[in-house]
Length: 251
Image 1 (cartoon, rainbow, N blue to C red):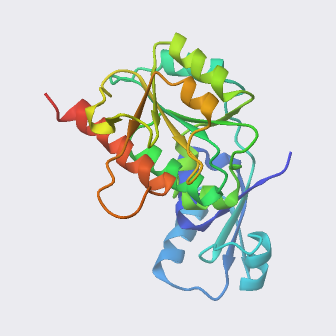
Image 2 (tube, one colour):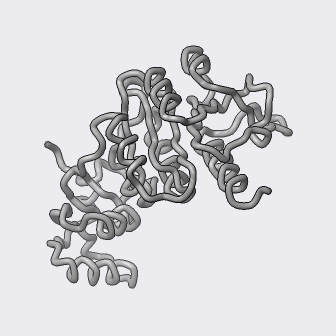
């Protein structure tokens, strides 16, 4: 099995918090002497993790040319959930006091968007992100870096058939709401207080017809200006914080 490459301070610190034993080696830019790098070195030394000083060119190679902030970790790939049934069992056995919240992504193929979605998901208490195995972004080093640690906390599960996964979630008691411009009601009119799955489509293409048909309802975000839609990660943030607003602050 290939290793994970963790790029930048957020991704490495998130793995340090969650599973430090999986980090094999951390490579640091030998020319960086700033306080942020020194502080990370102290944490790594305390965890007895091997640190190698190297050139910026070496780091560029390790990160495949992606932005790395002068630090790259090589770590074991963490084992996630094998299927949706495992994820649901884990959620049902958890001791959370609030209703479940999951995201389903339909055709989101850009790792930058996936990373931004995982960052929002972690910030807003999302318990899992589901996507089809085809036409979906991989959880690679780019997505992990952009997630700023969210990828370490929120399960990302790729399923064979998204429509069947939505059916299984409905049978488990979730209300499936598709964010789509064809929705007759605003998202702010939807009741998001119970177990909910928010389904987001690719920017431009939106939700596929089959996916829309498997949603319990469709809801749109109000667009008051000249643009027709938001980036999928921006839509995700608006929707997830609306869930928080309804569950914590509405009466």
